[in-house]
Length: 256
Ligand SMILES: [Zn+2]
Image 1 (tube, rainbow, N blue to C red):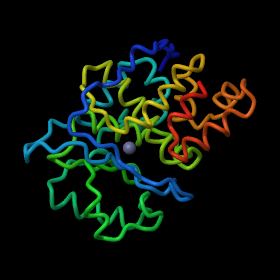
Image 2: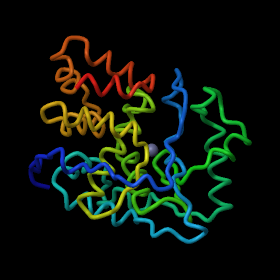
Image 3: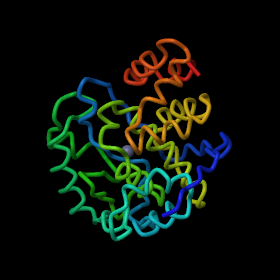
Image 4: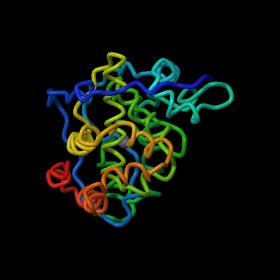
């Protein structure tokens, strides 16, 4: 592959979807074990039992490969067969999905309780989809075409990012890049993780080359340039990260 050019990104490319239809942001209390919280796309909408026209892994890969910005950062996640998300997304019907989700959740920390999920909590938690160790599991009847894009971003992220940044920054950055790719390929995206997204969008648009700095951290695990750019205001990185981990999004946004 030849040298990829980074397409400059403008703030206007990341649209905040104004529809509030059906979505409630997941509420949680951040804690020490947030890095163990599940990478789940919390239930935003149910389509009355109808099947969702989920985006396939093959489609996600085609979107990424056709986009210089994304391919630059994600190409290293593609395997020798040229597959990124292809072959890693399963769409399951209700019972099979529920069984896999419960098994997955019970091995993880519930961000609401900071303890491992009980079976009852897992059943009540309501998710569209989750990403489990390199595999995305989608519910046949839940989510939107953007759900597979969001979960694919979890596939493509650097393994250190969630642990380094915590749940809110991880989901917010995942959603930032989800909405960016969705907007470029014409997929309508709901207001999933709206608070986390909004806070990360403030970073992306408030720093010079903010999208590139975040992409380098999120996809490649390179944090230095992001920290340096934030710390042009002394101490801002640590201050920002603490606010994000505490869920104080308005104060975090006010730093930019
Ligand atoms: Zn997620």
